[in-house]
Image 1: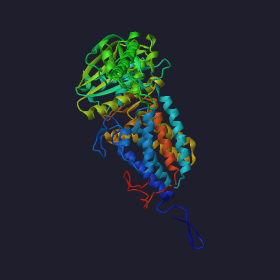
Image 2: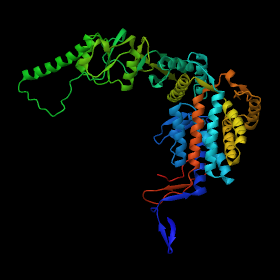
Image 3: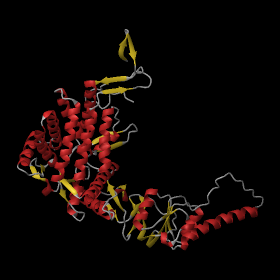
Image 4: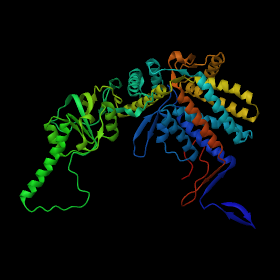
Length: 545
């Protein structure tokens, strides 16, 4: 690549095969890619959004309308498009819902910025306007937010239902939302924080969605080790072991020479008595249930079965931690150190058959700080999508319990923001005013898309919503069934405040970052690089490594 002339001789500064796109062309290419990503998930937004079927190179099928799942499954190559995927991932990690909203907003902010760039407004001015507008948006959202307490089960349930709507949960939303709220309330810590990792979600194909249930305790996807062990233990005293009940191999290479049958017998007897000693240590504590993270020797299994101790081996580390929380026991790394104080308590430990698999249920814990939800559904794809809906519902209920703030849904906060930001823009003046107005216009993409996906007229819906908000009805949003503006708080369509603030913040930050790029230099190892732009609307087209 020539980067200047010296005495008629071009100076090459980039390796052969590198590709450079600069200035307006680079901006156009990046904005186009970002808009294409937003366009790909836009039709999934809202309760009437459509689903996407993703087929990977192994032929595995995922059917979903969860924004972040779609973007993770897509094989995206364009660097600016990858940044849009990052927005969705961040939104998912922070709040667990609103991933499509965040991506669609970022796409619209860039689309509006394109118009400003055509008017010769510098990207730095647009960036400053967008940042100011995002800050003002946070202020406005805090004003329209409503406080809610952890005891307000009705509102919490509505939040779960709003989050699940349109995600394949169909008619069973009510039941599933009730399960989600109950599960979150069970795992709230003393300081009011909620770690949804303490809620185990087990998926089992078979039965119907309404067969899903909540277990106040743990469900472990394992059965008992030996058929002679009891199937059911009441008044369980549970030993949690992170140690193998088997004879360890020596660390160093050791050779044992046995010269007579007596010596061999003595060797085997010694091994047996060591295993018997390990099992006796467990029995001595009074434990009648053992969950072991590692292996258990066949002979040890026999001793445990003989004593009538319900035993499960090779339990996942995460399940062991949750068992400790649920039963109040301690995970012990040495059998010799196990004492009665380390045992967990549960009213019932039982092996049950769910579908065609056997699972271990640990129930009736005194104060279970971890619980389990079993999801049932007719096919694997249904259960997978239910699981994604349930994960979102648990996260949003957890977020509301932590923040205690919610906002109306149905496009209401976005229309209110657009209205207030236009008023704010008028007070700013200068070129930044245009950027703030562009930000306000971008907000309206959410109600527009909701209307479009519900088969309603975009313009009519938006005009009707605006007139309600100008009258001061801040919680007026779109009723997807009738297409008329309705008070979303009365309708029970509510979302956590954090879903909106995070979506707007991350969309604004990503849009500003993409806008400020005026040069794309891509190196390609071996062979010529691909063309710069990629076709409009295509997902790839870029040959970036």
